[in-house]
Image (cartoon, rainbow, N blue to C red; front, side, top):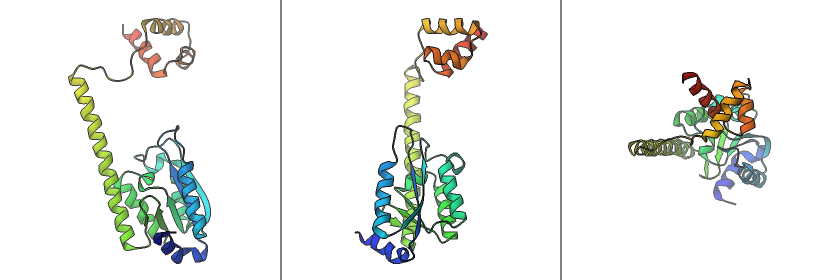
Length: 212
């Protein structure tokens, strides 16, 4: 058992701390189970009682609290002081905006609730832990800004080279079938389902026909 875990246990496990676990993945194809298994293991090693597990599936960390239902529910539990400690796999599971991260940390501390970040080995029971948490938030926000900048630069290069962006158009045969089904009074979603194309594709073809 690491010194970090031992230190935390010495501070809060004696009162059998009630713990909230939070896990998040950005896409529906990913799983939160690995995150949760590690957090459960740490909680068990320290004798902490898992009060509730909160999981957001397929939601970006850039989204605010109002767009992450599980995170919002956990925050409400924090306000009601239902937990002694919030555990999560990594700082970027909580969010990628420094403002959101610091606001969340302030909410925790106002209720005397601590935070455990497994990957970074940080707990906010110490001033150093709180400072490191804020620094990690800065790095997470910087990383997101850099990714966005690279994506925008790539799109600009593609446009300059005359490349068409976005999804490829469907075949003329499919477009003709879309117009035919629409003329028969079929709904856009039904057409999309029948032809196995996106709803946006059907709408584009229908809109182009109106303009023509």
